[in-house]
Image (cartoon, rainbow, N blue to C red; front, side, top):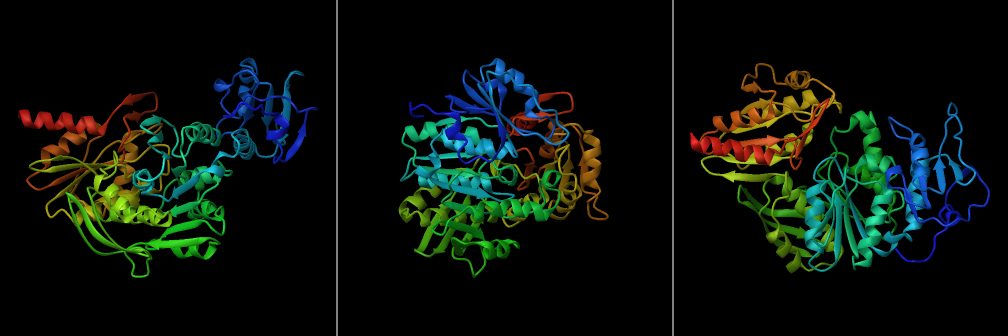
Length: 495
C-alpha cells in the first residue's frame, strides 16, 4: 500500500449515498467489516448478515478507533446513534459499498494483474491449483480458494472459498508489491451473489459444471446458475471464458457471452479435447487437441474428472501463451490436491480421500473410479447438517448405484442429530439395496470399511477431504480423515 494519504470522500466517489454527515474529507487508514480488526481512523462498514446486523458491533468499532461508519437501514430499523466525532454514511447496499471502498482503498490493484476466476459446483480447487502450477513456470502467480490465499510458499488461511472483498484486495496489494503479476482464484456462487468480487477485474472466467448444491442459500437451481453467470457477465470483449461443453448448462452460458471463449470436454465439438487417454491408479496419460496443436500430457492425478480439470487448466495456459513444454512439465510434476481424489494408501487394497459432498460430485467420483477399479469400491460418507437437505437422498441414490458397499456415517452434523441426517441419506437408496452399514461415529466407520477391504479393493472416504475438524451442535473437534485412515491401517497391521 502506497504511503499516500487516503480520504473518505475519495473512497465514496462510486458509491450511491442515501444520506450522510457533513464534510467527509477525513483521512481513512483502513476499511473493515469486522469490528475486531478496526484500528485508529479506520472506516467500519456495517454489513447486514443473515443472522446479525453489523450495526450491532458499531460501538465496538468506534471504541477500537473507527472514525467513520457506513451502514444500511431498512424501514423497521432504528437509525443508529452515532457520536458527533464519527462520520456516517447511509447506503442501500453495504456489501456492494464494501467492495467499492476496498477496491478504491487498494488503488484498484486487480487492474494491474491478470486474474483468472474459476466457478462451478465441483473442480474449482483442483483447477485453481493446476493453473497456479502451470502459470508459476512463467509468471509470479498467487492463488486464492478453499485451501487459503497463497503466494511464494506463504499461505494465509481463510474461512471462505472466496474471501470477503476487503481481504482479497488487502492480500493482492501486499503480494503485488512483492512482484505478483497473476492471480487464479476460486469464485463461489455465494461470493458472486453477495458481490464480494464485484470490483475485481477478471481476464478469464472458467466454468466447470453445475449440479444441486448450496440450495439452502440459493433456493432454486435457476438462481444458482444465474449467480455463476455473473462472473462471465463481468468479462470484457477482449477477455476469455473457458466453458466445460460437456455440462448440460454450457449452452445457456455460451449464449450470454460477449467475450472470446474456448470450450473443453470429451465432446467432439470441444476446442480442447482428448484424442486418446488412459486411466489408472497411477495417473493419466493423454493426447489433447488444442487450438495451438496437440499436447502430450502425463499426470499423477487420477480419473476422468481430473482429465476434465486438466483440460480447463490447459485452456487457460494456452490463452496466456504458455509453452507446451512448461504446461506438460507442470502437469507431470503436479501431485494430488489434498482431499481431491487423493490416493493415500496402496497395498493389498487402496484408500482414497475426496471432498465430494454433493450427489453430482459423488457420482463423478465413483464413475471415474469405476473406469479404473475392477474389484469392490467400499464407500464411507455422510452429509453436512444445517445445509441443503435436498441433496441427501440424491447422494444416497448415487452411492447405492455406484458403490459395492456403503458405510453411512457423520460428516459435520452441526445443529442436527447425526442419525437423522443418515436416515435422510438412506431414504434415497435404490429399492432392495442392502449392501450398507450405519456407523454414526466417523472414526469407527473408517475402521469398519478398511477391515472389510479385500485384495484389489478400493476404500473411498468422501465428504470432508482436506478438513481437519468436525462440527457438532455444541462443539467443534479436531478430526482428520487422513489421520484416521493411518490410525486404522496401523491397527490392521498389528492384527
